Image (cartoon, rainbow, N blue to C red; front, side):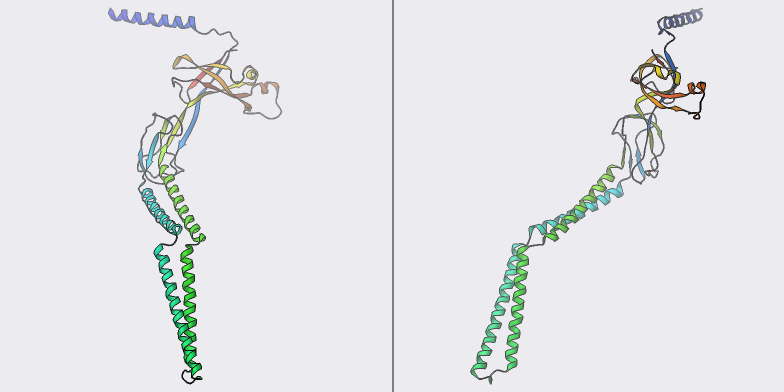
Length: 328
């Protein structure tokens, strides 16, 4: 007896709810434009930009992700080692450039000056020996000294003067320091090493797969251990906003709508309508017939219309059938 009463109570409540909906439903004045279509949204396929083993994947199908969330990571051991090598090479090149810019050390300048002094002393000694030999030759009318001795003394003086000149030029080079061209070359090599570091750091950052926008994961296409590649998507994301209903309007009704007009969207699983507005009206007819048309055939043409949905409660799903009502 109690079960029968409960069943009757449920039936009565359902009847009251149906009557209330019937009495409060929007009036159909016969002028509203009713269109039928399906929910649509944009999708994005995400792939790693490098080719390496996948180390980790962090999300599953159906999860909501925000822009910047890390969805997956590649194995970065090889990149990390290469980056450490490049940084060491850049550090060594920095020292080379610093040495060139600093110029000669005081000890090097002192060493060059001492060598010049030594060569000057050798040249003075060679000159004195030549003068002594020539003096003896004059006093003895060439009998005490042979011509060969004079030639040897002259040769020693020339050699000493040549060495003195070389020492002076070497001292000048040490004093002036490295050439500008050598410094520029070292700077260019350092810039190249730093650029290589930047490339490796960029590749290391791209070892993380990040969500570009707020979205919902539609498909997870790879797993940890798979070899990633730029041509192989790992995830397919459905962009949560905007959403729209893709529908079509006949040519005879095309003049009744315009972008920005308010609309209501209903789906089979929800009685409460979702607010929307017309966002796009195609300027090209679908399935365009031949050039020569009859009047009846022209009126059969349809145009794509996108009705943007204000779906804050996230009730719409891709492909879901929907009814659009545009109040005239």
